[in-house]
Length: 146
Image (tube, rainbow, N blue to C red; front, side, top):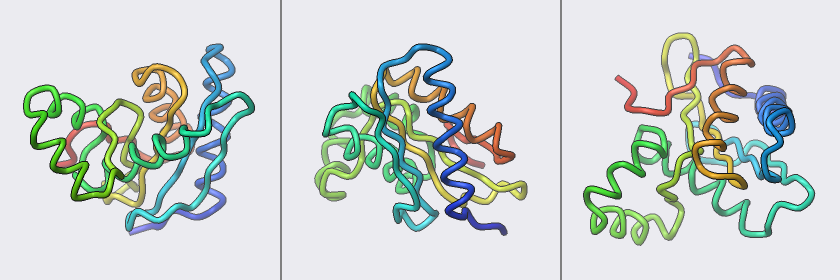
């Protein structure tokens, strides 16, 4: 099993921001967490709102907490909003059911961290997350990890 280093996390963030600029997206905030849910690195582009850190962190943390990407958490929240409300409460607001939280897996398909992005629509946030993970040689898991 490998671990996610500060250099890895910084490179993933920079790649996500490059993808966003290439696609002319709204200013983003990007957080990368280790497998234990601890922040490794974070950047917020000029013009991104002050709540964007909490949203990006919550997308990544929720993905780690549930073991699947925040897109799946979003789908489940639509089917069972009471369960998601309960999760949000017991996690002290750290779970954000919106696309843009993606698990980072090593080559053995072990979860080594997660990325959370906030700033544009969730689907665009997620495109940047997946692209950044894969371009840096890791596996992106935005669904259920088996």
